[in-house]
Length: 506
View 1 (cartoon, rainbow, N blue to C red):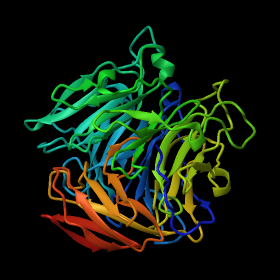
View 2 (view 1 turned 180 degrees about the vertical axis):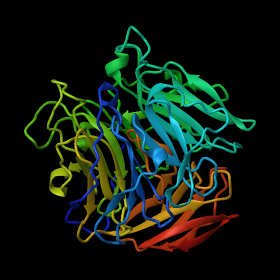
View 3 (view 1 turned 180 degrees about the horizontal axis):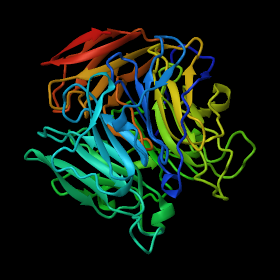
């Protein structure tokens, strides 16, 4: 089931160095036991990503990236008034109106907000026609561009219904789908809801239609619930066992997706209380994923340092090649919900480093990422444009942590940012294919997943020792570009020009 994966040059192992971070903590009562996400995106056009960090009962903050290219990481707290709101559980960046400026969808315990982005990190509150931010406890989000639509479809995942007098157990709220039609958004409830903590649109069939996968928290749905996959038909519906969907019930916190087997189809990593689950896609035209075997090393079910042997609690998950050896690794932010006695309190973050035979080995401690704060949201992103993925971790009632990747003798790399005419200027739903000679690496452009936060920006590829590759794009409407040869060690803008690609470095 798991293909043997060939690495490039041998690596000594990843290493991260803590960097100074502005004062920030995700805090609050039980409505902020979950959430605590970070949005990573460039809002001033300098190609260095900013951080928008949820604060819970504290104001959210926009941290502007002042890092020198290739140097130490430095961020300034520079939050415009519209963004300095409380009650924020998370946020996701995307360009809703296709004007070239990334907007920000802000999730809250309260009214969800859409902030319209402008030049130089300016934002103003914006209610697209038909959109209603409501007054719910929102903890998950994803977006996709459905065929022929001028604006994205927006999915909001809601947690416990705070207005139900019989709550909290067994009182999960419905989720919400906002689809654009005739110049305005139309709301559709997604029922049943099972206390969503992560959701992600993925085109698992490579059909041009993304379906909505939702990870749900068993702690509150208690019984009768499960993970969900919604078929995005004119009337959305849940996939069934007869179609190949396998029922999973877990304390779901986060979703990450990546093609690990080079077949062009998405594997998924699901965080939970106790076992984390890597699932391999095995369904061909059926929505079937199978749990990875325990021997693969991805369950990460107990702390590996800190002395606490109780089960771990995983939150944000992210794939990324942290040492550029051509093999994707997995980062998991960990931390107790609050004071849950059956779960570990000293619960270090995981860095599961993939080996050439497909196994994963824990290196969080030796890499410098084994913080014992109660982590929630996180991100892997190249914050200083040096070709190495750095890390950001948001902690509940603990300091924001920023880690610079200082791995020695790392392999080669490439970043790719897609551009096409409006609508959907950032080509959400496209697939990038990178032919490395012995395998084709596939990357789907998505919005959502993780836990309460996401990244908008160029796609990052570790290449090992491969210094040249062939690149093509399957655009969201299904058009397939010609192949183009690209060199390692470059940041690329890839612009749609018919079947050809206009490729520029920056």
